[in-house]
Image 1 (cartoon, rainbow, N blue to C red):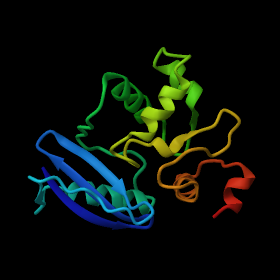
Image 2 (cartoon, one colour):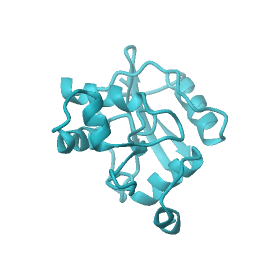
Image 3 (cartoon, rainbow, N blue to C red):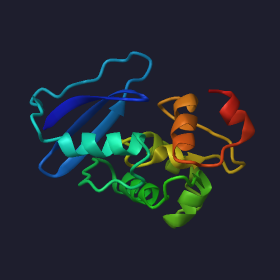
Image 4 (spheres, helix red, strand yellow):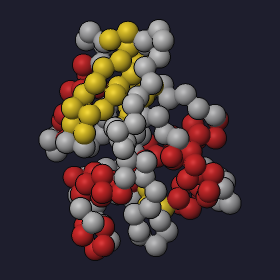
Amino acid sequence: MFYRYHHSPIGRLLLAGDDTGLQQLLMEIDGKPWRIGEHWQPAASELDEVCRQLDDYFAGRRQHFELRLAPQGTAFQQAVWQALLSIPCGQTRSYSALAAQIARPKAVRAVGAANGANPIALIIPCHRVIGRDGSLTGYAGGLARKALLLQLEGAQLPEQATLAL
């Protein structure tokens, strides 16, 4: 597994992947240290394309990532993450809409938990999931960061969300 750090407008990111694809994109949260795997190696050029696409996204030149992704998770989590990938840039979905999309309409809380366990934040766009009432809810990176990402994408936000920044 190769890893590298990448600076972005939302803070430093940790990227990790191997020949199967990108496995992790983590944000700094509350100064908690990242765990670098025992056999991980610093990337030379292996993650350059991920960094280029992230830079394009933050500069407003990219709305869709074209990368090989290899997130590790349960079959249920994989289904939720695939559903997240179907949310277009600048749009949002509710947890209940995602649950219905994966044919598990009563699994709203489990969808929320899978969303929170997303190991490839931003690229698998868990920030595009909001409450059924349109409110910004639950985001491991913080609601201000979630609002910033949604504003960057041109999503319509509730008035109180923009005031929180």
